Image (tube, rainbow, N blue to C red; front, side):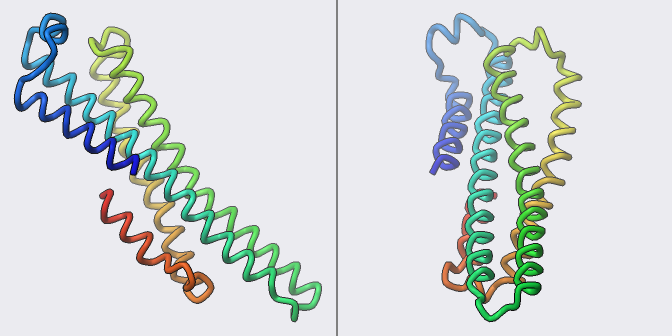
Length: 185
């Protein structure tokens, strides 16, 4: 839902650029069409970064849900001896830790990027404090971070879904995950 609102807000910014329809205050403050277009493009990018952060939060909750179901199914095995039960508990703890490590890296990366974009558009639109070359370097750093973190998080969730498909069958995670991923990509 939040992703949809942020995407709509971004599209509305681009529509303002296409129509060249701004408030009189904006026209007075930024008389150049090119400068208004640059600023609105940055606002557009910031809106999508915030939307991606919410996508990361959704993936976080999806992963937690799947891991909780797996944990509950593992703990429900009364037929295990004490040593086997401890081993299953340790394996589950490791599974949760490794899976959430990838998801947290995605959430942190998206959060940092959306925060940077939002703050730089909001508080430094004229680029007085952060020069353009520095912003471009940060843009590429965030892009690389996003690709790596997204790959780790999504890869972890896909592996969980594939390896524990029978335990997760009741919630049908395959269609929930891919349906959401297709909508926001």
